[in-house]
Length: 533
Image (cartoon, rainbow, N blue to C red; front, side, top):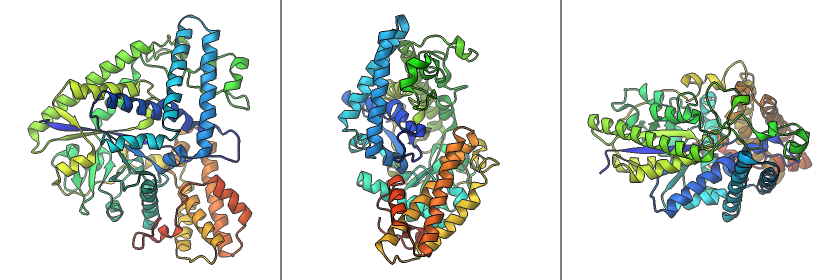
């Protein structure tokens, strides 16, 4: 019998970016890159493990905005075009290059062929693809909030927090045919009292950062290596710092290894302009293509000094790192089992896009990790968090500490001099939405307006916009999105109150911001009066 457990969690999330009113928007490629570099490679790993009869276990959160985009016909069609362009470029590179670059171009062409094959094998519906692994109990999919709203900064409006949670659960049920067991709190951000809303929503557990457990009251006897129960019965699992840093950190973790592919040296920026022009932005601006020929080489090497990438060496290094991770978890769990009265659980959560997009070799690492955990050790088993709670239903009752997994561990990254200006506007809109929620519509047009107002507020609340403002990248887009959703909301609020909704304008807005087609604006009445979605 295993001495303990390892729980891997991948948080798959992107903000809702969809622009049917424009032929090309660079930000839509966030989704396309993630499909090509992360989501399909993960499915390919799962397929290989299932083929080889390896009973792997992994938990993923697929957030409502991501699920909505993956199933949106317009974005699916645009991804087809995006992938075709990449395939064309890779094949063109084979023709016009020699030696090692030609070898790498062939490698990319074959990889893209397999990407398309997987894409088409799931009928261009990756959500359906992931669902196949729920049925075999290899994958447990949990939810997040409706638009990844940062809950501690809206806690003064419990109706708004409830809307973020309840709309997400209804969306999950519509897409997966059952209720989620757990929730990945956006940015792992928790505040005291949130557990009551989670319990009312029927959720069994949530994720928080390690210090959210360490500083719980009373202090948890087993730290992060066993869940704690809140007084509501909802469990909290904490992130293990040691295993997270080994994978996540580009400085001391695996992704910084010299053999791995260099992210910041891309063909889109280095090829002759006339040659690459058909594959960059329509306005002529260069961008990443995803075809990269160089490796990290060393931490001190400039971009000009980077050496050519070798996928075979990189794959061997990923196997070595997976073995190191397996050994470290074995030693960690063996020690913990000696000092605990129950099997310890090491919870290792990561952003899904780390694997494949930021760290190209990440899917290989996961593949080797699952295989080595299955064949090469007997100290731990991999497990879903929900299964651990079923096996060990008695845990210490504590109150977690307010926390997040952002910079400094609290709310600084989402509330600072770069983005503080958005919150008075969001709070005012929230107050107005709560007011609208108590209104009964006088017509179908007004009902549509009320539901669209709820969508616009949810989209404005996305934590991604404040995050981008703080990072300093794509700031103009983040500001534009925040303002546009607030402007649409405020126009709807005024038009509804004056009974003069512009039906033509509403038609256009519904087509653009078409997330949550079954939403009921009454969700903003709060959890005392939940309504069916």
